[in-house]
Image (cartoon, rainbow, N blue to C red):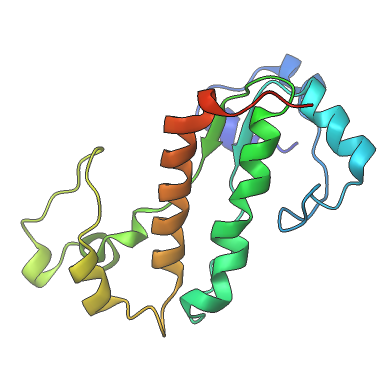
Length: 160
């Protein structure tokens, strides 16, 4: 509920206070650890979802970080598609791109990243061996989950 960042961006309005309800939960749990009743209430009452959570440990390999950063998205997508469709605002990172991570220095000086680009997987493998540095791979995989959900969400069966 801290409006500091929104105030600095000049997009904060005091009436937002009544609409923002933070909940402590665990997005690795099927109902976010909130219990079925609270989870179903959220499915019925929320208007949109901002998913900003991730494990950002750069020293974890992909296998260890996958559950938190990739598999947990199943529950987030389910929240967005239960009872009615709700927009998902998913926060990712440009850290998937070695040129960004390397601050566009040396061999990356002339490299540009555009909105519709996908990371070069060979370049990622060279700079981020997944057995050692899993975070960029987990964010790339999470984006693939979100992309698939965006393409397929209208085909999901309605909730029971």
